[in-house]
Length: 308
Image 1: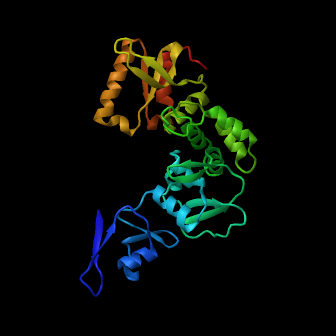
Image 2 (image 1 turned 60 degrees about the vertical axis):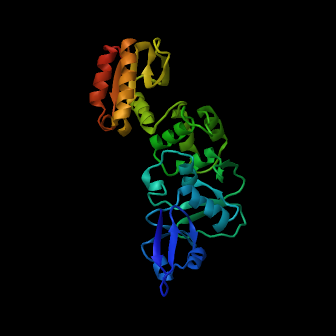
Image 3 (image 1 turned 180 degrees about the vertical axis):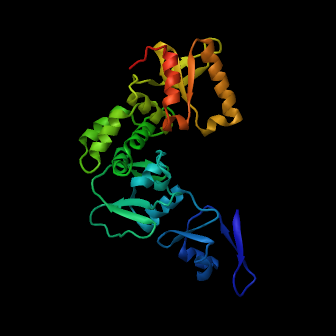
């Protein structure tokens, strides 16, 4: 996908590729005029760097440009690192939501922040390679988030690093707790509190919020992603939340559960559970806002012997 335009004063057609980061110098050499560069066709993402507004580059590509060209040797940090690590941030803290690119440099490095770029000066933090970039260590990223997120959102971010589905850089909650105890600085108390409430094998922020809701309502803490095996097919299933001794499964249904494909998968899973004697309760976003109806169903399933 490319956008074409005629260079003023000639018949030459200039093709600007999609999903790439360009320097001002590079675009000018291609024949893009200053007037066109200042138009709505292009978006300035970093000092001296632009993308096509209709087909912008990925956050990873923009962060790579920041790290290699704009602030050579910098480490990607803060909300930018959090988003690249796949942590569940509110939209306002994401690149698409308008957040700047955050990097850090060692003390003494000469680089100031600019529009779309925040440069932090911090020394001595560990780093990790990640997808061709150098990022702050995830627990330090969590510490940055601790000053920006409410408790439950921060718990969801800790949970995300220990998720069953995480394919790389999975950190057990106990590791995060131990490292948080050794940290110092603003936000550390909030991070330690979030780590205490976090659990391993949690697959989504809404599962986190559902678990915390039950605990605050006085129920015993449910098991996260309890594993069951269909004795007929040997197929493996995981329950979002469960009270195994009571044979009660609680499944969170997000928007993706209402697609035909996911609905079929949920139906098959429910059939196995019902055949094995489980009671299946489904919780949705509205139940988190007004939990009374769901809790009434849970009380009924518990038969008046609530695990509280």
